[in-house]
Image (cartoon, rainbow, N blue to C red):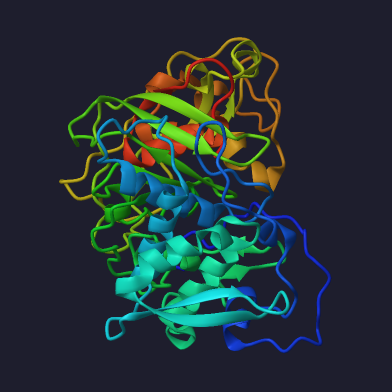
Length: 462
């Protein structure tokens, strides 16, 4: 809830046969909302590295947990002299990352962690209490169990039992989250589970606002997150996740989680810098991509203190709607959406549409002149405004009078073709979302107006 990403959406139905006769404990129900054994996407996932020395993902499902683990591996290594995209991680690094996650889950008045190992069947575990002071050597001694297929489940279960089932459930419900940590028919990793790993609480709201509309933020995270849900819901990700203390971000593309990071700290004033993007899941990965980013506008402004839903009086001459991208441009430049022309309809005076007066401190929307009447094929603006009641969606093949409504061009108006570069930034963001790579749209939530160069080939998938 509250603008958070609820799940990674990348799962498939790779479930093992259920075992309804097996008694299921509260913690198992909290994780799975089911009595069935874990799906193969989780039970067969190991912690293995690619030739790029980064964690791979075998099947759809656990990408959120793997992205968090890889982010923590980077977090713990970024200050090592000589750290770079070719840094080699070992089982020692994995043990240190697991230890860090488990310590975050410890409740304030406790000094113990519950470590799990698999029990006699797939829905039970054995538990052992370990003092936090002894946790790293204990995890190191048993790290092979976490690395082996299904080992990420031991980490999930250990986090839940360490933090406490009742507290995890309470935190999940505080912002209207899912009823289980791994949710739905496709067994997806929720933001509540990722939050438990990242900061030791299962409140998974990543948005800038709480469920009541007031400000929401994470406290000084070292790892950030950028989410496509910001573009779909118009609720920004909270400020601290956009600007973590280290240049490490988990990217939520709407149906998958990947990782973005720099190999050294970035200054907020930096306008030219390099980032690395990692996707461990086929078919888009395993792929490590260097991104050369140009961000002349700097970083995004902070979110307002509360949700602003004011509808302001439309400004005549501003863009009301984008009809389409130019078909010829799409054919000639299929991957260059930012070089296409777009057909737009301008706002006209309409006494039936009212709104609040814009405050003088607010920048007015950009307005345009319709220019000279078009020749050749043209779209009647009047027909476009009333298209859903008249069902007139087409264009005129010529002439100066609309064949649909009978109005002249002067009386009915016409659509206008504008190049991407002349669109307002808000409309450019919509075109980025509709036609551009998701990666670019995600980057622009942090660095508005930025561009990214990934060399040859298709854009990295997120």
